[in-house]
Image 1 (cartoon, rainbow, N blue to C red):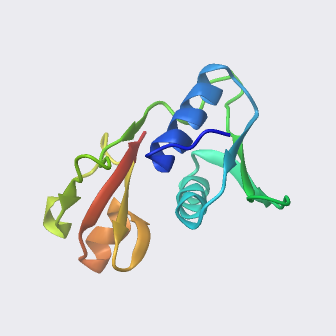
Image 2 (cartoon, rainbow, N blue to C red; image 1 turned 90 degrees about the horizontal axis):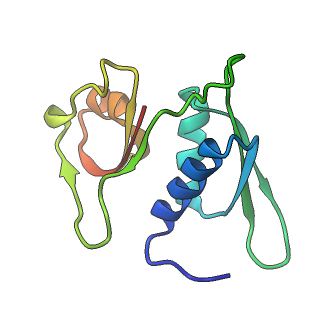
Length: 133
């Protein structure tokens, strides 16, 4: 398996490609941050579920994608905001709703990996990881 400089972008790209190909699930090499992002996606209703599969080398994060009866994906867009070459930070007051509160931004804050809505409630800013709608 090849190594990547940006594992979060790799995760988002794998999910984006699986949605376009209408797959039911996608496997991603696991990490604590990726598991936190998957938990937020599940809590916000963008994916059905996720589970961690143990193997001898590295754990695998299996994400089960969510579709409507008309075969429409729950994820319309998935965009990486902060990148290793250019980090993007936002203060709590700068966190505006995404697509009229349909979408979310995921942030890495001192309180952990949280959504923009939770960050505004807790009045904390942080690094804007990605935007999902």
